[in-house]
Image 1: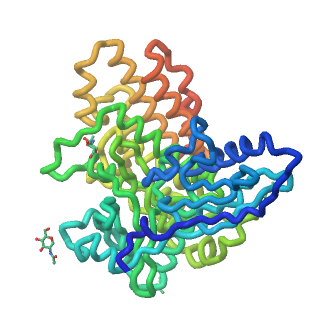
Image 2: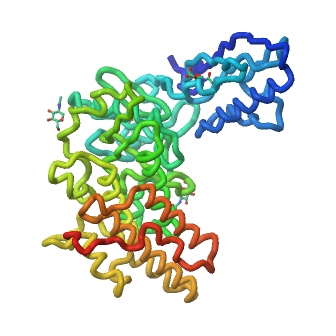
Image 3: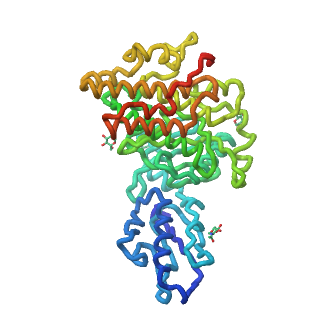
Length: 447
Ligand SMILES: *[C@@H]1O[C@H](CO)[C@@H](O)[C@H](O)[C@H]1NC(C)=O
Ligand SMILES: *[C@@H]1O[C@H](CO)[C@@H](O)[C@H](O)[C@H]1NC(C)=O
Ligand SMILES: *[C@@H]1O[C@H](CO)[C@@H](O)[C@H](O)[C@H]1NC(C)=O
Ligand SMILES: *[C@@H]1O[C@H](CO)[C@@H](O)[C@H](O)[C@H]1NC(C)=O
């Protein structure tokens, strides 16, 4: 079948029992409208603009995909053809006749894409389309038959583990909607072939900006871009830790897992080895995803793994905070935690800590220092304060003792204040942004 997943029939027929309430016909249509607007808020991506005229300027019965009953004048059916997720649901009204949009489960399943379609989209997985590789497999740039550009992540299948990893990633991503977290467009799952179709991120990964190949070295991140990236990552991580329906520990935060879209918004990706922490109402997250099979697997990448993981501690949010701290230090210094200069007990953390108070230029990325040199003294001073603040945050997050590290939510709040300080109110002093960084680096913390 040559259908693209986007043109496949993705109907949502919501069979609404014709509850005609002659006694209250008047404001019914307004409540239908608000219910559907509320529903729309939960949708982060609408590539086919299926919901473009869903607003108060248009009568709800004229909205795309909405059918109203001629008798009651109320919404009776939704047909979200073109919306990228395949939705299977029965919509109900509550006892009082209000549309119950929480009954529309956007995450029921993905449209399937066929192997043949992926072969065509990627030019038979042509090497020239390869945009990334890892232990999980390869990522190709693909163009679907409707012209949309996507990233196709083909999982290497050689053991039961990659299937588990694949299922885990799908289960997690399906539940998660946040502007700073990667989402799935669709999946292809065959016994011996598994692939995820993800949005294509035109600006690649943070890795390629921090450590460009020589022929690419024109790429430079400005200071505000770096602050925004730190903030985006913190927001995405805070969501995973504190707000998502299932708490997720990422376990492998590092620059190559931070992707940048057209406007340089950063998205945290690659939940392949993430761990789910079950909440009591998440009975579907069974042992396969959260349980013993992964318990003894060392998580993460060298340089970014929290030291306590080396002593067999199980994955924790504070482990992610550590990796995030390394990431922040790396963004400011443009030094990898695995750089050759770090040996014999010297670490990125310690190196920054030793120098940043009196020799800022020694540790901060030289291109950043060059940018700052040309600025007027007031702005220059402000940026220096902000750089120190970022380094402070990085140091706090990379303390050895997990309990001394802030939470991702604290870090996100702190970065939010920092952005505010830099962007909104240029006369502000920095006192407001000391939420996290009011230095609680303890003397007893061993390096
Ligand atoms: C709406 O539907 C959901 C899912 O079917 C159900 O759990 C919930 O109780 C309903 N809400 C109301 C107010 O009826
Ligand atoms: C791969 O892509 C290159 C460049 O587009 C093309 O020249 C080559 O023929 C392709 N290889 C295959 C096996 O299709
Ligand atoms: C899965 O991974 C673990 C740890 O890497 C390994 O010991 C195990 O043999 C793998 N399982 C399979 C089925 O390959
Ligand atoms: C990011 O991608 C967009 C679109 O491809 C491009 O116009 C822009 O220059 C890129 N930004 C950077 C900083 O490379």
